[in-house]
Image (cartoon, rainbow, N blue to C red):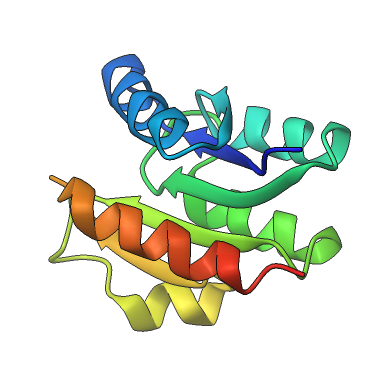
Length: 123
């Protein structure tokens, strides 16, 4: 069974780029447009091993969703994404419960290394 990664971003083009990359890496992908959808999918789909989530989104933003997800999903690996490197730093993400932070525009080779690193930690 392939490991599943949930991509959460309000931009459809961003999601499609990540899905193309991640499926080529050999993983299954699910998608959500905002934190509300991510929370719903994580409660429904137990196969998700890694979450790649944007911070700035409508309805429920990434940091709010992150805190709620951690209430019931403590072992999930979560990589947050942002284009605002002035406002968000890794320390902010770690304090909120995330595992890592990557800045947009994202270097795909760097993202691939992060995904492989965290999925190696999954039991």
